[in-house]
Amino acid sequence: MGRLVIVTAVHEPAAQHLPDAYKSICAQELPEGWEWQWVVQEDGKGEAVAPHIPDDSRVIFRQGRPGGPGVARTIALAHAEGDYIKILDADDQLTPGALARDLAVLEADRTIGWTTSRVLDLLPDGSTLGFDQDPDEGPIERGAVLEHWKEHGFRAQVHPATLCMRRELLLALGGWMALPASEDTGLLLALNAVSRGYFTREAGLLYRKWPGQATSQPSHTDAAERDARMAVVEARARELSYLRWRYPVSE
Image (cartoon, rainbow, N blue to C red; front, side, top):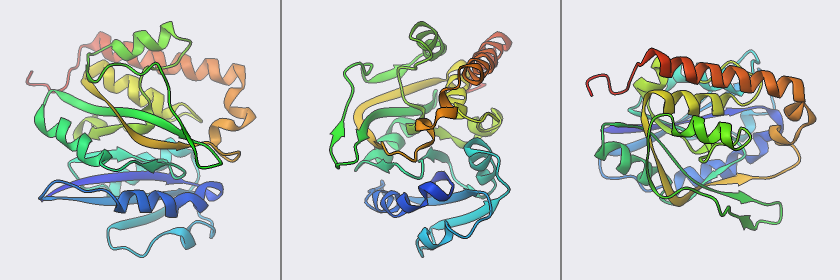
């Protein structure tokens, strides 16, 4: 039986949204012979998150010393025994069919190392808002994300919060970057530096907009730190391209 593992990093402010994330996972219909597992890693060792963890044998909950979402997701890989790894932030929700669409792409083409999908913002009133500049559905060739990101003010054409990846590729890249933010963007650019990806035009994620989300905090937009993060993210992707390591290696 194949297994797709959903990895979620969580800290206290976002824990209240875990039940909605869980409902969206339970609503997924996977192809015959596949199952899901949800690994929830708390970024810290408090007592506020555990009450929001569902009583389900398919759910693994772990805690650890705080280090940010990238560290939490990466250490969660120790418990993620599956063929593919899907990211899901604690305050977001999967749309119906999202996991099946990811699996269909990755199972059909070994040269595709990762997938992304369209995102809809989930507003506080329950309504959703989409974008009008999503790319066409289909493969994303190596290096395309970095060049778009540089040409558009450090904004990628696909959203890293929707990533689904081959486990061995994710591990080979060292997981998420050890940054205070933009760790998922760093992973996206690294993935695209070594492997082709795929974008699905059908919405795969509801991205919750709320006052407590990390990207709405003043620290996230601090200019000096942001410039440093972007410099490291770009340098990593360019060095990976320069070294010419490719996935799959037998291609």
